[in-house]
Length: 243
Image (cartoon, rainbow, N blue to C red):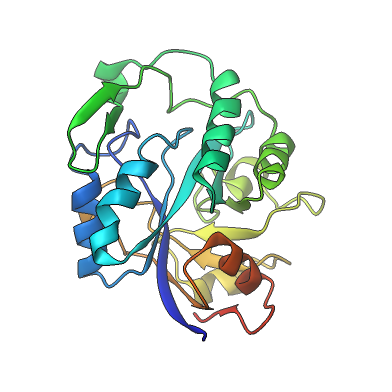
């Protein structure tokens, strides 16, 4: 049976260097429950290491957690990769790590904390997660699709680190699955502003607890999975975006 799922598919944790340390798995899950969110996409910068902890923390609240990673391409374009399979997310991460130069400067960019479901520190990630990988934009999308993931261009309404901000347009030959807009713009306004063949969705890009759910997308789905969202983006088998 199809039903409505409220999703925020762009959430950062305390692993992202620009994410606040308050963004622990339990705190994120509790805030999502408060906001009546059914699906969370955990998309830290260039890493998926905190996704397992979020999956565990969200279980008691019956919130679906999608394994994600926000990959910064060579062109400094941010692309969300969303996966049903945790192993696929880690394979994407491994490929990004191989092409991610530099080491994090904690004083400049902040700590990058890998935690368990209770928020206890397991280790500090030393990679320069805030930086751009050396993977070309086309290769990023190709990587995500090779692992059966969804490739969504992040916050296209913003100037910084977005597809339109960096390139000025959406390339016709880039096989993205959709475009995301930030809380700065409504989906209705985005549809008027961006004439694109691609479906539009909204995500909070939350780096702080109070930002979770500031922008969401409602889907008609059978389950809170990437496979179901793929169908909704293509308007197949009754699945669709509702807002």
